[in-house]
Image 1 (cartoon, rainbow, N blue to C red):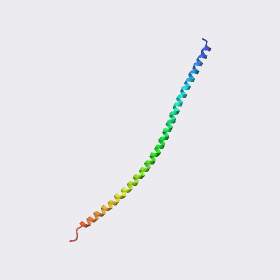
Image 2: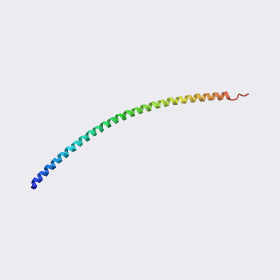
Image 3: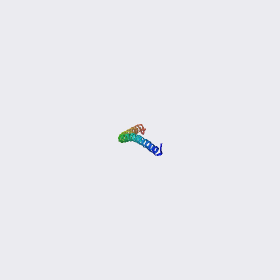
Image 4: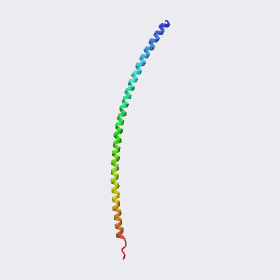
Length: 98
């Protein structure tokens, strides 16, 4: 076996191995591209869901604020009624000048 023959044979093996390696890396790259696409789709979906949830929380916050305003007004109104009845009772209980 001559050096030239050995060199030619080894170069052929290296080229074959390099082609196999390149094909394998290309296949792995395709898989990673598919995974990246799925992550992009999931990110888009989460962004849409986040936007919807923000809108719903804002709506819920507005509704709760409105309910609290109504309850506060009712509490204040009932407080005035209670205070008025207290004054009337005190006026009735006040000793007369006899």
